[in-house]
Image 1 (cartoon, rainbow, N blue to C red):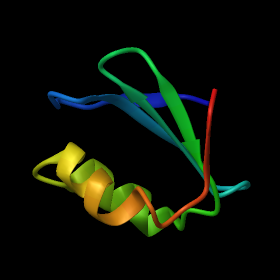
Image 2: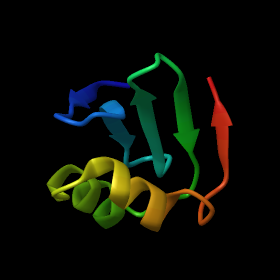
Image 3: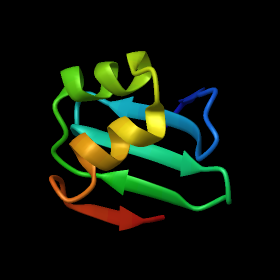
Length: 69
């Protein structure tokens, strides 16, 4: 999955697979998580957010299943 670089202190990049509804997030520390059944507008809002980390914590973590890859 191709990820977009994000200018963030905690999120290095994020990518989205619309066919699967999967959001992939790479953190600055190097870990990568794939969030499941995420609607595309949520991904687009993450990219547009003033604070990517804050948006991720508020709108994605705890709302969608995930796995570390």
